Image 1 (cartoon, rainbow, N blue to C red):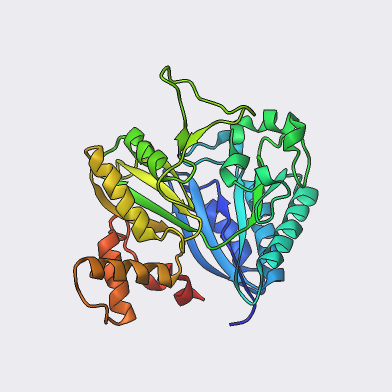
Image 2: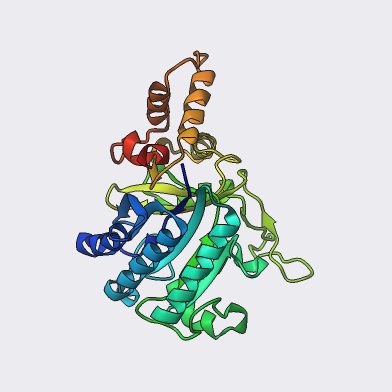
Length: 344
């Protein structure tokens, strides 16, 4: 396996197949890359795309896709259940093989410079590519979303890393970064109450929730920073959402380091909190791709809990994890299409 960089751009369109295809065709037409997965979500009105390639090819494909999205997506008309700031909302570059994180930081900067200069879109760098500590966290950068951009861009503290400081009403702003492999993992509940899903998210996500006094007011420290009650899981981000298509609430989770918190641990934690709130977990889903080891570990966990042997072939162990996590509840989970090692 030679030089391989993964790129997982998220586009603010999850309904119009023609627009999605027009964007992904730009990736397919770029030399040196391979399109692995296209995962649209109509409730989020968002599509997660995964492709891999060499450094030069990945940067070029990301730029071409962003340019096409800027032509076809009008953020002033966009509505969806997922936080978003731009037509091309977030573009992370992930080292897979033969490259280091520093290389992906360089790719992110090269991509961001082109998008800012040639397309006139404000660009913020996050995670390992962040230029300031306060910009590492994606949620912090995206706070206020598209609707809050005009005010954010007037604040000198939020001057974009690349591109103009003027509001682009059609394309919004884009976030580019370099990070470890992220698993977008969502857990389904047998309720359509979004508030319950969000309450669970607050309990499990690392950032937790603001600390409040008896009157419900947020408590701040001597420096004016909000005090927080941390959640139960490290390296986890989460929100509660409603999937209108299926009429269920979902705990939408980003596992930003599955070596710290793997999918099965998040699944069990959501089950525990759901039970305490009088609801049940019915299954889960992985948006985009996942490393094989995350599923193998889930299978081993379930077998160990049931007191069964672990001497199963890889294929069978993956089937165990799919059944245990309920990964086919909303759509059939096909390992050959969802596990990155099988796709490359």
